[in-house]
Image (cartoon, rainbow, N blue to C red; front, side, top):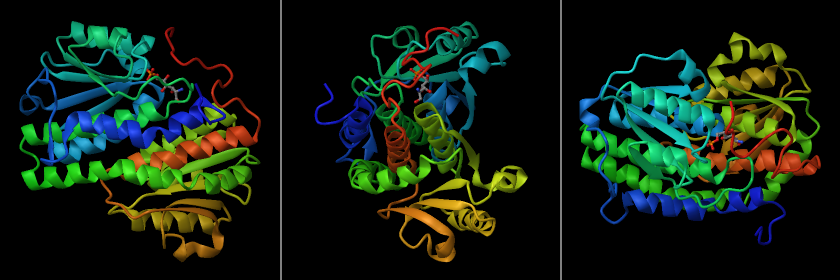
Amino acid sequence: DKGNYRHFMAKEIHEQPEVVGLALGHYLDFSAGRVALPFALPVNPASIDRLTICGCGTAYMAGLVAKYWFERFAGIEVNVELASEFRYAEPPLKADGLTLFISQSGETADVLASLRYAKARGQKTMGVVNVETSTLARECDLAVPIRAGTEIGVASTKAFTCQLAVLASLALAFGRERQAISDETEARLVGELMAVPGLMAEALRKDSLVEQIARDLSHAHDVLYLGRGTAYPLALEGALKLKELSYIHAEGYAAGELKHGPIALIDETMPVIVIAPPSPVLEKTISNMEEVAARGGKLILIGEAGLARDVADEVKRSLVLSPMAPDFAAMVYAIPVQLLAYHTAVVMGKDADQPRNLAKSVTVE
Ligand code: M6R
């Protein structure tokens, strides 16, 4: 049932404050300001020196975001792998290490093949999964449900942010077990996570503004998304969403890579979407914006108030979100990124729930 929405995708985007709040509530003790996992981990996080994360498409992007969190909060080395590569690359994996698989459906063929490979190598395995009766949930050592509820739109939206909610909670749990964060830091970060659903609800109020930006974007042939830190995987995710729904060619880049190639593409016809959440390296992103502006690129900024000031004349559009702490801002900034792809597809008359050539669950290679 789509309720009052035109598409399942719109409904699922708007469900995020609620489902992300529920997912967080399952893994965090809000009143104590602590992570409270309702299960035992299959390994002692203090006894491993590397974590491998594996998935496809949007689930892979969630893994890329989580890498920053596990490295920062738990001080553990993280490798994020595309399941389609991992399964054939046959990477060396230490027995008793940990591989974490992320999959909404839990039926993606490459993920299941990678799971079986990791198990055969003696790895302990975890599945961050939405469909709790899926093959991944059954075959991994520990299934961690993301509790997003049924996702019908082919484009992953609420599954992505619920994956992030679970991965953030796991990163904090690892941080505590590895004594990489103090109780005070844990309490602060749990507080920041608790604020995410409310901030998502505020971001959703920008829906009609995003729709106006989508009207501009619908005329583009190519779109560049830029971001740094956790906004870099979000740039990749934004480009993936726009491609799959509107069929406009889009690419995501780490903002610092701009001058290593993609800057050659920039001219007056090229929209450049800069995802600029609060971050200790925001100044660096601002200088990348100036580089785009100097070459006549059409800047579309997603960030806090004041961000556009320095390059004001060249900024075509900006989408201003509320101030927030930097650590989990990527979860909130996912909302405008998803809305932009959704509205662009709708403006262009494409089927946002069922894009051409795509299946919800990719059970063949
Ligand atoms: O069910 P899974 O999470 O394993 O699916 C992985 C990808 O096929 C999926 O995220 C795909 O990239 C989405 N259509 C993106 O919106």
